[in-house]
Amino acid sequence: MGRRAAVTALQLHPLCTLFPRLDGAEFDALKADIAANGQRQAIIVHDGLILDGGNRYRACIEAGINPRIEQYGGADPLAFVLSANLHRRHLTPGQQAAIVAAATNWLEAHGHGGDRKSDQSATLHLETVADRATQSGASVRTQKMADKVAKSDPDLVKKVAHGEVTLPQAVKQVEKAQRPRRAQATLADAGEHESAVELAARTDAVARKPVHTSEPDGLIDELREQVSTLADELEEVRGELDAYRAAESGQGEAKLIEASKEIARLKGEIRRLQDRRDDLMNENAELKREVKRLRKQLGYRANG
Image (cartoon, rainbow, N blue to C red; front, side, top):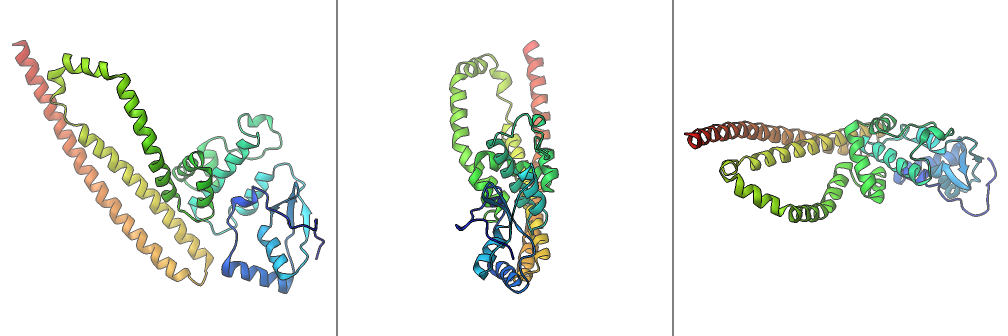
């Protein structure tokens, strides 16, 4: 069944670790199949590390079978790994987007970022969000979320890729961590422009007092953000639902019911927020018309 390439245990290549490891019933089934029928697919090694076949390697070792190993002979290990694993596994869109985002980090860290045209071995195009979304199969919005997490917290995006954290949860963690920094930047900016604000308040007092629409504007923006976040969560849950259906595992039925309930809840929450947003937009439009009318009256009085 093949000879082991080295006496010592082989380690996983960083690109191999982008994907979640099999465990539980799935791994036991793989091990039993290899023990009964032998190893069908070779384990691919690159630079002395397992590039593809980490689960098969572990299953062979635990089953007492000498694994069959082949050296990678291609020129683009990243393209090979993504092609072999990204769409063959039962992954949610959030996981797929996170894997591609993490792969882009790896690409940039190993000197393949920047001018990709000069790298003749590269067959992937990951320069833009659209490129990465095409590669992952996720929507552009989902890929943007994954890119945001990957840029802010590379370790967290790997947890998303492994299914330990959902993508919307990871985005919330990143945004929560960024709030203190944003607040400090806002305070610093306010300090720099304080004199300008005071001057505007003195010279434009009459015009400034009636303007009280900032709160509705802020609420509308916040509601839009909440609707967008919920839509992302809904897309992720739908992806999980599809993954559960495809997996056909023993717990699949319970997870299907749970995911269906979550989808119904998210749809209801989105409708509620959209209704509230529309009401606020109408109220805001009325307020702006009233402000315009009052300013016009003030202008007439000042000139009369």
